[in-house]
Length: 503
Image 1 (cartoon, one colour):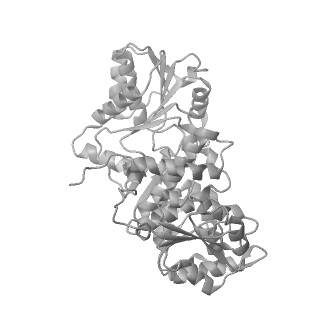
Image 2: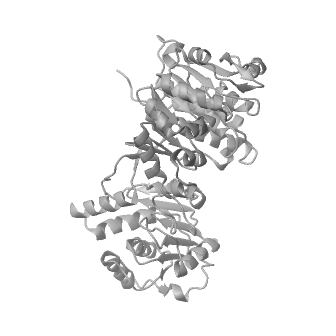
Image 3: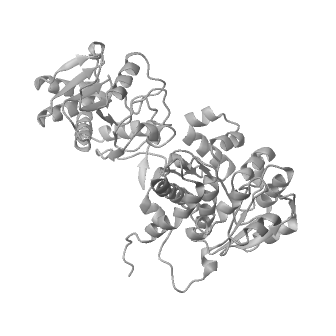
């Protein structure tokens, strides 16, 4: 687990470190040195500097490149410096490092490496004018590009940009920011690393889900245990048009491969009959139907969820008044952990989120951005611009855990937040969310006392399984079934991780 700070929190942390006795010049030196050590520098190098503290990091870097015998040049926006930046620029002048103004630069071709030190994480809005021109030239140069702190043009809080540097390596300074993971971040950063420069983080509780965190969901199993210990779960959904969704969620690869003790697959009767030859480990619970579409019967739903720790509803259920009846019943009567996905979310949006006040148990919602727009009443653009804030506000207001799916997934209860940085563009395919629902239902049943971590861990497992599938089949050719098929491999690796010796 690593801390993630918003831009404002990073600024506050930086100021607190300086107030506690670490001079700004020293922090700048540590940042520049960290960038130098992290990069693989090819001669000649250009250090492209703006006018803020990010440029100061670049001046330190330029001095270190020169000391290492790597020919370098500073490309300067204008002769405007922060006080600490001025100090390090003067040190570069003493070393006679060449300086050119942006206005005199028409191409960046021919450089082996380019250090992007134009904007820092405090940047917001859109890069324009000379800055946009320099960003375009960096991207067109073909040089090995290293961005200091965050790619210039990328918003540090939301990962959005109109024009941004595309880096081979981004060196985050101090702490990660949300913009390193969300929205467009993965499309602009080939690799990223965070360096500690001695700034104690002051934040409200955003954490990065890592492999070691996910592994904590799979402690060694005791011999003196049984299937009930690991959770009876119900997966409810499916319809004539979307028959694959509930099957993907229920596949042993997605649910029992994620640790569930018993999976109860609840679907329209005709779907159960068709799935019977394929489903060996799961138990089937046929539901009333009309031409392959679920019909809500209270007595059936009561029996379907009886004795289960976790129930997921909505995968492929279709939108109808029957789906809305099911959501009303489950929220008002189910005392375990209820997971609403897909059409379960759409039904909730139609009913109104005030329905969540009537929840008998704990609720986890798993929307993508379009579904969250319907739930929250916000536009997709508003969500993209403030994803963490809006997710935390919604979860806190409604007393739920919200798992907001995207290139970087946000998991929050309104007080604490995890960001999951796993997954691949190949998962932008039908059924990926259904696989996640199967994994999540299993992890939530096994960890009812830490549902937030269980949800974040499920997103990590799903994303890592997707990456494994992409490695085997390619991003364009992989399917959600391939992701489900790789789940067991990911879980096995988590179980095999070294753990503290028990005495």
